[in-house]
Image (cartoon, rainbow, N blue to C red; front, top):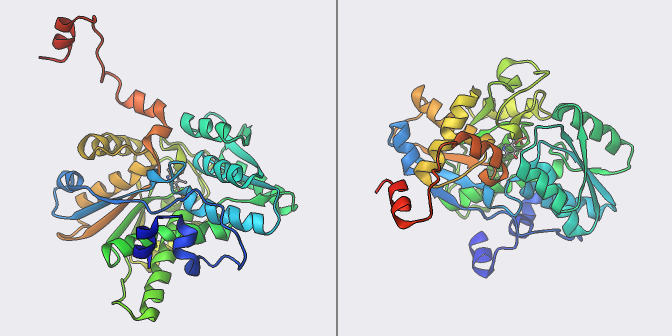
Length: 365
Ligand SMILES: *Cc1c(COP(=O)(O)O)cnc(C)c1O
């Protein structure tokens, strides 16, 4: 199905998978042609893991606003417009705000985003501003921001587009569909960061529904299901600890969440898939961040690198077997967080005079 669509030109996830997303008839898509992201082999990471495994990177940074949030946002904003919304709102660690602001601009409606003070990566704030959202910075964390916007949306004043909105999950399932379409079956492992836990919920729902759908169609052998491996940052690992974290802290600001809204669904995804949810430290995340960029040429934001650090941890723990197909979801673009990039690679530049001899010397020639 999608092969024909790709040949004709990709026009976003709603067109590609409308039957599985299930928007009401007559709902007009608000789209930036999101989705359709590549699944890139990562032999250098397999080598770093010391294993003969087939590692692929799902490059969600290639979505229009630079993160996977666009897959869910196109659907949530389309549905909101269909039901007459004039304002959309969200709480955000940054990427939801950038995405909501972009799709609101596209649709021509207002958008207000609520973000925690001082903990949103610079590029994400720049995006939300450029797209014209009203930005509310609270003296508090993400979990408090979400509580506030949920209460405001409950009054009927605005449509909430966080991942507690079921349309977000419907849209984000499409990443699982794409992986199956490309590999011809489900991978052995799907590895991803876990913050508010909407994405792990969406992937698991997507793999299950696509397996059932293709089974019904009877046109090919069923793709099967992957095992789900979710990783939280150690300073923001409520699911791993089994209790909410009042003051979550991590360099991976996109997953700096102490009380995930889709906690139960995340645990179900891990349990039902025979997978797990574990943690990686900030040190492991930043080591993975540098390794990914320097060995594969892929620049992902710190939260995304929890996938890479997680895969390396799985290798150390003997969880991966030779020949396993492992998909790492790289959720967002490294360019969004220039401050982390600069602080991690401090010392990567030298200065010199402008003459040829000096430049040559500075190059180490
Ligand atoms: C939102 C986000 C996550 C976490 O996804 P959840 O659905 O909240 O678990 C991870 N990485 C990036 C880059 C994100 O923007």
